[in-house]
Length: 346
Image (cartoon, rainbow, N blue to C red):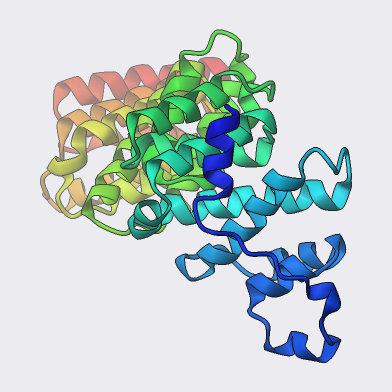
């Protein structure tokens, strides 16, 4: 362990000039890395906070992390030092995770040594960055160490998963959601909340390529499946938003299976807002059928079935109109049954 830490500290030659002996006026000519070394703790924190982590700021974050490694034993529970550590470590992880060139520049052995130090100083802020390493091109040793830190973290899994869902790539969001649904330690309420957060994150996610576009679609499908299994009615608004996206597709055949599952989910959630939206939808289809236009029988059957399951009187008028139109006998029979359920609920 000691050897690996020393490797990390000295993965470049660190030269510490005696800045305290210099004329203060000369400090304007110093690089930002030199100013960091020359500053006291408060100013060090200001410097590392003022510069966003990026490949261009790699040297600064490396220098800051080296500083925390060297001085860890001298600053016990110092809030400024602790914050410098968290900022520098999280910033370095952001840079390494976002830049293959930075990973090559650092080298696997030094990244591994950095993780050795992080394992001694685990912090919740770093966990989402460590999880990200699993899906990037790191050495098996680096990935193993990152997973070890995650596995042995004392932070509640719900908090870790929430952070990953909010901050990480869509691939990480999908992976952690699947992991969370298998966790027996999580309550149904926690699982439902994670599914809701993942769905919100999917809607706002800015994709970078076609692969992420497909992963966003898979994440949304997984969220709907999860919400269906959990009967998580608090997510009704999110499922309705997804429903509106699906019916906007010109090629309904491309999303038909997902649309059917989404309609079924709205039925099982049983909310008034779901009944209102599904009633509006069947009312729209009724107007098409009146004009002699084609309709998809499977979709109509699912909508009628879901409205009958919800049992909300808001659907009475549009469901009652079904038997007066040119639908199949199966649809008319199901609509009558659904209307009878509305009468019973009245």
